[in-house]
Image (cartoon, rainbow, N blue to C red):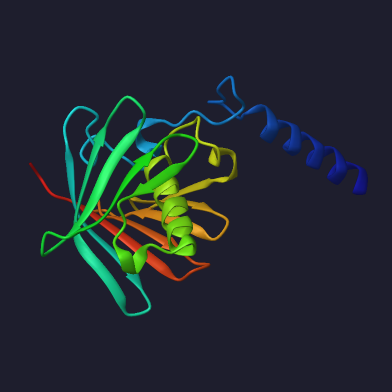
Length: 180
């Protein structure tokens, strides 16, 4: 009886390993259209994308509009609050995120580092060349796609709202597409 159990376990193991498909040349998984977090309705590579945005941290909130546009070096964006005050600008490449022109209350090294890491994960989550791509897992359940990595997760809800949770720092980022 034990010998049949061992043989069947080995068969299942090798069958499971042999059926992995969609591997690209760099060893990462190729993402299909239904497996992508950023859909065509959420982000356009040619025009300026506008989102109702929010960053929520322990009762301190920044809400406003985030604008994002594809450029030669990567994605360029800005976050402006409801009063028209720019919170910060950013440039996201597959390797890193750089924050520029931060308001004084946010211009601390630990805040900059956390927000840069979170924005890099959020914007480049579908890029197979991103440095963190091999560490992510994707789960789709009832039309809700969740991509997680260590202590961060991004969820695309059924209404195309994106929510990033940084569980380590207890920060929630929210993006709602503003139709053009």
